Image 1 (spheres, rainbow, N blue to C red):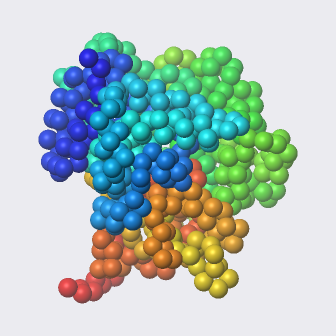
Image 2: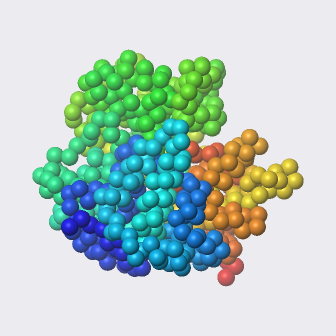
Image 3: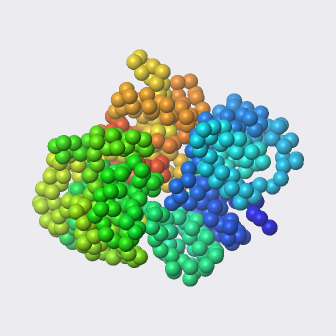
Length: 564
């Protein structure tokens, strides 16, 4: 019997109601066991808030404005009740459920509606993603209306969460990996490794369901299917990095550019952004450089794309991001904003995974296969003075700082650890999400120009405010930001607009203070936006734990005033 979407929704209700990690794992594992091979991949991804596998290039392209119009048509939607529920829950899915439970029209349609299955939801989401071109907005709204009209209030709650990417039940990817391991009686390490190379935990659960442990053992990279990137932690100084890694370390320029993953097979290359989006069409010169220089039959390599001026200095990040978004008249724009590629790692070569090899060996393999493409500038040393001079050189060249990479480190896709460390010379900026905005005054009247900044709670998925700012953006950027925020506006409360947390910005500040004003109990002092991080997803924003760590770290060099 096909699994109903209601069964998944009711499971997520139980998960949301408990804070016990073992109970979450147990509930999820038992549910996964009941699913058919066709159902398990979409169900696994839906439970962590994704409509499609992580590597998929499909996009729903549904904003809150679109959902608002659809909800208004599918029932007698009470927006006053919605605002009250939003104020109480802070969650659009939960608020939608509250309203629909009170809707007479929805209660009446539930008496005659058929059961919505997981596969039907999957097909509907696929159809929405495939809708493009002339009249696509109307078609999307019609498909969404048909889907939501069949949903019970609890199903609508989780459909809205999936459509907006805001699941927030406490079932994050790490717990899902443990649940998959429990469901199929394999080790968590095996599941984590397979998730790294397959690029998606749903793909792992599907492989186990269909092929068992033997299938997992054969799992490997697929060229043109992007995989999650290895991430770095932060070191404040080169000496801290050397102390942490306890040996000679590879120091490399941390370029002021955009990270890319490049896939090559039979002479044809595709380029993926940090968000794993296919940007091949926007970067033709990078594609040509790779196809001309790399002679391997197949490869997956990593690099940094930098936009340099005539003197060889990197230009502003927002101009580089325009290249990544451009799909029309690319040739003329490439003349105005030429790009340079620097390679720094290789994950896969001619059918063989290289991620288990030590970093130094991967670097040597990269040198042998890069052709004339430049590699990231590097020194290998255990001397603090030499590394500090190299850091000064990187900063003088206009870049952000250094990366410190342990010579024997494997490549761990999607994992953040101390094998790689990033070093900057200023107080470390934070990547935060805009969770709300206020209309400005005077010259900025009519524009959303005061921004509430949120750090991610890794356990709940909630974005906790750590202050707000009106500084850093140009007038042109504020106008564009207003347009984007209006499309994701949920509720307006006077001058303040609550928005879907979608836009990531890099924020500089002077220090972090204690503040009872915010739930996080912390606030950034003199916060200002240094750039818009269009290359990062909200899930890649810095966590509240990191903000707390920086707050505590401040007191290693200055006194801590106790206000309690």
